[in-house]
Every structure is written in structure tokens, then in C-alpha cells.
Image (tube, rainbow, N blue to C red):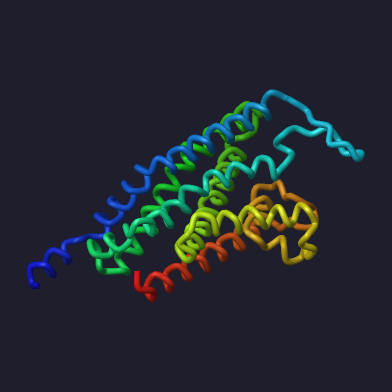
Amino acid sequence: MKAAASDQSVISLSDVVRSEFTKIISQPTIVLFIVITVILNLGLAILDISGLVFYPGNDMPPSTVADFGIVMFAPIYAFLILPVYAASSEYQGGQNRMTLITVPNRKLLMKGKIAAVGLAVLCGILVAVIPSRLIINILSDVSISYILADITGWTAVYFLMSIIAFGIAEIARSVIVPLSILIMIPIFIATGILQWPEGLRFLPDQASMSLLGTPAYEVTELPPWIAFFTLFVWALICKIAYWLSFLQRDS
């Protein structure tokens, strides 16, 4: 027993992070959807810089694809497979029980999981988001400060939305539940089923588009700093809920 306890004590946070990160990036499903996100974002970037103009009608002026915030934002739902699948895949086939046997210290395991997911998300953003934003901004001949602010905004949105999705997926132990919640809400808003703009603008997707400077609707627009704070609070709530859930449940 003493030997077993000694073996467990040598498990460090860096070991857990390394192990969890390796599991995430070795998942074919995650890699596939990162590639899909890259293709979608690059495709939208090429459409934007091509100068292709759309005529929405209803006395609206001609617009480029970048003027449609919902369209530019849409690839994030493919990207969210990364945190969602990283959270829920371990509950398939009892893999989570094996992880708990290897790392019985739940607080250590939880810290390692969160750090690994955060690192994987940042790597995903570096590949799937930043190149397309650089293409759009550099060819638009804007200032360096504008480019940095734009990249920071998109990074913040993708990162915080990923933390929100990860927390929901860990609580629900499902891939379908978090994606259904995060995808169906904007659909309900777009169709007019939900009629409460003062409250709807504080939902994650609406706050995200406001932070990016392309709100879906005028009535749901938030100032950028309020939009960031809204997303941060959502991410914090989901993280705390996951923390409490993971510590309390059996496996």
C-alpha cells in the first residue's frame, strides 16, 4: 500500500496535462473538425478579399461576406467539437474510470484536464482562426493595431466559447447536448421564436458577435467590454459547475 501511495504521489500536474493533451490531439474526430474549421474560415476569407458583393434587398446597401456576422461566426460550431469531444469521449467505454484509477486525485486531474483543453484550444485557434484573419486584414490594408485587436477578439471568442462548451459537455457527459444548446438558441433567435432582445443579447453567441463588432441584430448589440465580460461570466459559471459536478459524482 505504501508503494502504491508513493507511485501516486509522483504524478505531477505537468504529467496529467501532457497525458490529457496527447489524448485530445490524437482523436481523429477532433483533428477532422479542426481541418473543417480551417477550410471554412479560409473559404470565407477568400470570399471576402475577392470583393464579391451580395445584394440583400429590402433597401439594404450591397455587402461583402464579412458584413454578415452570423456567417463569419458560423465555423465556430465546427471548432467546438474539440472541447465537446474532449470532455465527453472519456465517458464512452468506461475510459473515465481508468483515468480516475491512474490519477485518483480528482482536483489534480481536473486542473490537468482544464489546462490541457485550454492548450489544445489555443493550438486549434492558431491553426484554424488566425491565418484567415491575417489574410482578411493584411489584404484590407489596415493598421497593425487593428490587426492585433481583431486577432485578440477572435481568439477571446473562440477560447471562451470553447470553455463554455467544455463545461456543458462535462456536466451532460454528451456531445449532442452542448452542441444542441449552442446551435439551437441562435436558430430560435433568427426565426423569432424567442422574443426578448434585452435578455437574448446576453447569450454566449450574441455576446460573441457583439465582441467581434458584427452583432447579429441591432437590438442584441452589446458594447465590446460588456460582451467580453458576459462571455467571461458564462465561461466561469460553466467551469465552476463542471468543477463541482466532477468532485461530487461517482465517476
